[in-house]
Image: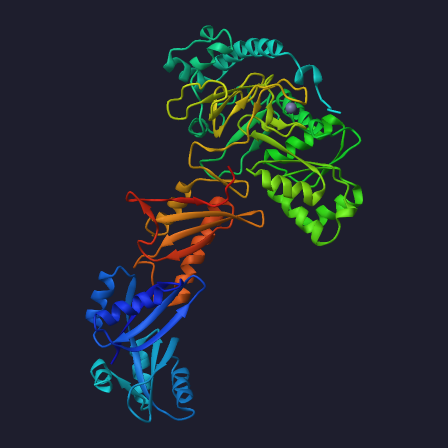
Length: 145
Length: 433
Ligand SMILES: [Zn+2]
């Protein structure tokens, strides 16, 4: 019930981000979700793509330092308070959240979140028990079909 | 009017200086041969005996000493007197394995302080002056040397040591300091602070004696203007005694080497041949009067030129130019000796690839060091806080090893410039030489 996130080390210099995204587009890699965490010197670009194996090969070939992390993708109703509800569920279930970010898909009434937690197994158990809808890679791909 | 501490020595004829050197060198070589087994062995390996050295003209026959010898012989191997006769230890700021430890008898301290007294009087100092010593006290030779020299001149000595700029300025204003002794970068910083606070008309400085790091003519002009003083250069190294091995006079065109104590040579750092007068090369010193730590033909690694032309100040001792570079890869950053290999060791210990680049710069007259390290998959994480924690660990390790703060910048793999396949390890933007 996890999906693969690719995290890439990008120097915080003009043009570096464009250089990276150009490589993805040239190789027909579609980004489903993306977020950047940055410091004054560097950024960590986190992406979820259509074909993570192919993307990893391309990124390695281009000489980037990267890692692959299983993360959770969650569909939540696109209405006020729904993110808060999930966060409360995770808090009560003592799931340690490292970071999260949102993405959209061409499907009305739903919003999507990526959660990076310390313990995926535990988070999946807590969320499923509380009726939260988790997406796997196939479901994610169908959203963009 | 030019003032001298020991005019009969400082203005002696060339013949007289050479006569002193000949006599003292011959005696010193025998003294070292008899008392320092480490050097005796070096002489034997080269097939030289004390009898082969009958004048300065024979100096080239003697083996060299380098920092590596100091390391091999650490701590007492080059000390020529028993502990009972030595009275002082001084040391450099260098780190483990690179640290120089030097010994002094009372006689050695006296001659060292005499040299500093000559420097202070050359800068116009008299017993009526208040000498403000902002060099560090302790193991570092800066504080002790100028402090002792100031005593010899009979000046009122203010042993401020380094740091605490507020207090420095307050003492300077309240007590009417007239001669400032510190590193040029600290002088520039003091100048800025004094002017920022609008206190320039409250200070009474007339001269400054600045050394222990490289500085430019431009920096000299800035400091002179900012503090309303004349700024004098001073040169020295712990191995030879400390500051005052050479000092600048009113002519401000090179530093007179105290040739009655130290014989200077210029050699080609590669062939080790002695170069003709006036040529640029590595400065080598032979101590001819010291008792406890009498290094012969010590290679300073400083590149400079010796000038024997007549000086307007009346002194007759040879003048050395400001060092124009180094013949090894040592960097002096914030007055601290830094070798790129030390940084390499830290990186390897911490699991990084040894692909790095040091960027040294001077910002607002203060040195900065940035260590660029190429990111590796092992060090990387999708969590920024994990990466910055590793970065912090590296900063702390460098602080512990080098004694100074270095900024760490993680860069992309293969982004460090390589020329002919070899990475350029050091980029020094300071333009000091
Ligand atoms: Zn002179």
